[in-house]
Length: 297
Image (tube, rainbow, N blue to C red; front, side, top):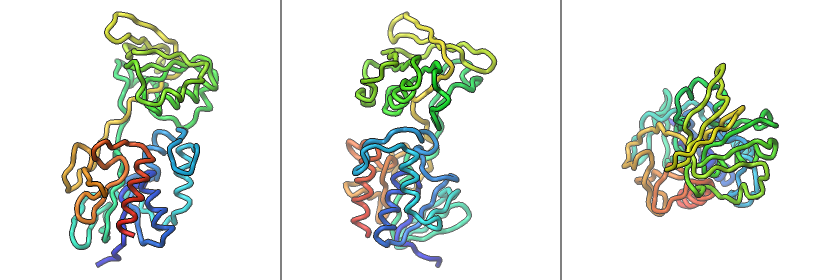
């Protein structure tokens, strides 16, 4: 039998990386299996410029900086990239088939977040033709003095609105409800921000492969507004295309008990786990990681 690791972590998003740093600090043998070719999960793919404010001991840090901070603490030989998990056999020693290899461990920690996903679209005709309709943000630099419409009401949409309105005086935030899902305090002092509540996208005008304006409709009313745009940012979340694990699942989530146990010595932490009143943010994921680490270290 191959080397049996104390812990194998499936998923190199922020919670999987955080758990790995705990193992590294305490000298616990571990290995990370990541299905994609980079670490960081959604923080890297979709929200590298997002400000994170709920990490214990860190007042504020950009998502990409937090990923780099965690990554810097983990030796490269502890991470296997492009190792998509194909099979898990739970037993006295847990076997994981990932990529073209088999791995063995005493404890398995699943931290896959929402797994592979694609952005949820705006939902209007000709959307796919437009290269200025954006679903993730790598940098805000090119948006200075641009006309920008942002659709969404969660924390990421509010973060985008705050950052972009600081460098442009023509920014619109459109949300389909009267109240935001995210913290409205984020945009409280954003002077250049036009907020439209409750509105939904109705149509776009396209010219030369770009959206030049977007028409929005007030919910439950025949009232329309047309906004000229250089860019449209869509933050409607993601549609998960999750891996199916050989355990009881609730949709794309793994139900766990109060100790984040899925089954035997298989644990789930972060966005992938499900329990009553679960909040899918980084801070709860860190608490879950701390709890599991105490059980297996």
